[in-house]
Image 1 (cartoon, helix red, strand yellow):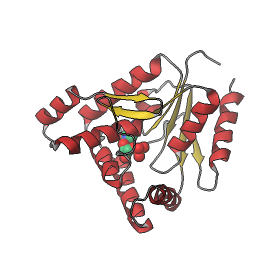
Image 2 (spheres, rainbow, N blue to C red; image 1 turned 90 degrees about the horizontal axis):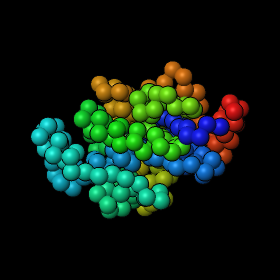
Image 3 (cartoon, protein in one colour; image 1 turned 45 degrees about the horizontal axis):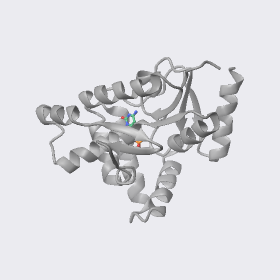
Length: 219
Ligand code: DC
């Protein structure tokens, strides 16, 4: 296998990207970078500072004064651990909204490229195989039915004690899918050379094993 390589995992919310990407990184002994967490952290900061994300001057000032990083699985926003506070439905929507703004994407994509060029990584998101690492050696596009994806997200949220209903999660997920696939700047789409994996009826172990078999098959 090459010394430095990238594995791109893209797909819609709830398709299993982060669970699979984490398992792959562990199995292969390389770093995992959750790019969704970076949009979430920035969305969180927008709310904390009460800025109008559609005002270019306010947005620019915020982008220039924001640092996002990872440390042992934790998401750091300006040095503070925000890993748990960025997982709420409200921040999901703010992340989706701010990710549609070209300036936000420009800054976060540059950061992601810097994080993944000097070491091997598994990176998950919406545009990894198309924009961030179009030359990634391995590209996968995970999908699942919207009901199955909402079921997974609902289980995740209720396990954390969030008060919500399946219908509400499904509606929010459909709204976010619509945002992410119809935005003008790099909407979610499968890279032409990415392998699509429908995870609707597969367990985490099955998807991980399948992807590992594809990676090792190529070496
Ligand atoms: O993967 P996630 O649900 O944590 O992502 C949160 C939002 O961030 C998602 O609705 C779209 C946006 N996003 C993006 O536009 N590009 C990425 N590479 C990752 C996430």
